[in-house]
Image (tube, rainbow, N blue to C red; front, side, top):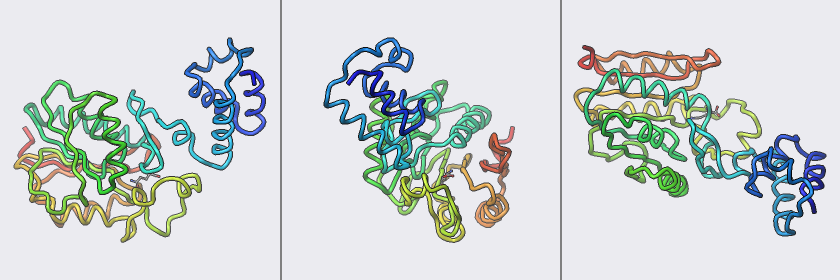
Length: 278
Ligand code: GLN
């Protein structure tokens, strides 16, 4: 089949932009290049693959999983069904964390990303904080997620450490920065079917009205913090008050600041030790 015929076929089933993105991805052409090669033949093998991908998209599979990558903070990151597709809100978490780190620290720092998934947070911090030395650790309980994170680290040529573990349980090391976008959706919350039917529930849902991981992390976090520290969490937009009181229960002499995302919803909490205030 020719490129033009394939596009006509796909556009009857899925959105035309998606039809172009998928075919471009398969043939290593950008969408504009596709349009100047409309008369070119596509091998049978690729035609079959394309039809399968169109079908997957029609069956509500997220575009990023079909493509095998997503864009995050200027990088193309590998994603598959074993990791959450990083969201815009998480880019905002990273952006603000970089600002906090630059404001609060001016020395070598160690950072751990709890529940790293694709590695989006930890790897982006490692890459963008190139004005200071960072020792970055990515932690996840899922072997499959760690495999994706390792591939992304290789792809971006970043040297980081990996740990397979259940959050901070039995971790003895102390860090300057602890960051996490843990699962925070409560089991009874209604979420979009494209998310619920495709993304790993291990990365989405948490007991205790979605607060399980904040409680677990915060209950022992002091053991893993240096004297001067920063903690950064992504949170569900209804969880600010509850998480703030969990923080106060476990940490004294800290500043707690909540920031909103671009949709004006409470989305990030930053906690830092008072002794970092200059
Ligand atoms: N922000 C994600 C969503 O809305 C959830 C991520 C999470 O639970 N950490 O689907």
